[in-house]
Image (cartoon, rainbow, N blue to C red; front, side):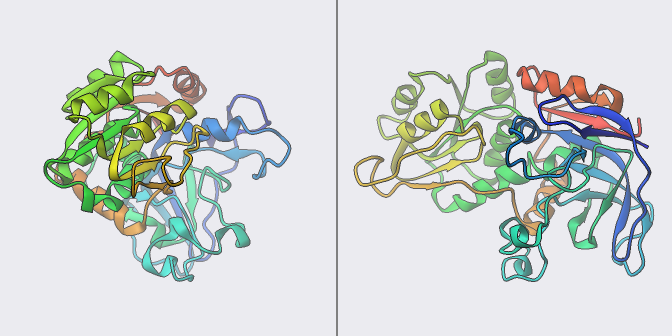
Length: 346
């Protein structure tokens, strides 16, 4: 079967032929309908050889949707032909966090060498993939796989971040979304679906800001050295109760801190390497800064329900599996509008 693999540190991903996998006990084989392309993959492929954490070659793709093709011995809960989404942050399944479905915060994953598909384990960017356990699958029913696949990360991650701040996302409050790309444009829709807050979107591209307005942002601001001042102007000098930074680069993290109000939440979702100093007098009083990771199993089911209700619509560009390296090139160059999706089986 064809697969997209990262094979050599520092090299571009390649489309290769590898053997079709067979499910072992408790495992499920999926015929992959769609696989998402993510900035996290680019981050992984930019890491140096020294201390690189994964074995190569690595089949990419931590966002996956497919149909059940075969069940390993003892696997239960699904039937051949079921359409499912893959929950990515696999955990041990037995620690106190996993027992609550919070496998994104598994206490033993690092100790046991458990990695997500596409980020250590073979991922979804192949004609077929193995899912280790039925609990890591969520039914999607009649949802379009192409529109749904990005919800497993680009939907789940902002949903998890927003839910943590719901007590502050009250009517009359303001939420700032920094980065209106793959995650940010979904985050804007989730804020509009879950709350009655005013949404201010920041991005460096007018094209991305146009996308932000089209999915529900009330105000848009060019993300530059004057962005925080503009946010304060739009909020009467108060700042935003919740700031969600989907970029996480040093300049955007700085803007996030400068845009925050007293008793606010600043949530750094992006993995751009930025850090925000915390201390008395450094940020407005009682500002909480957090860097959450992905989302829970229950939250993925909730995001899928929002999709069934028509509350989220991911803007996607589709590519064949042979075009996957091109999709990564376009993503790295900032030329993807919304999310890029690979169709491994056509």
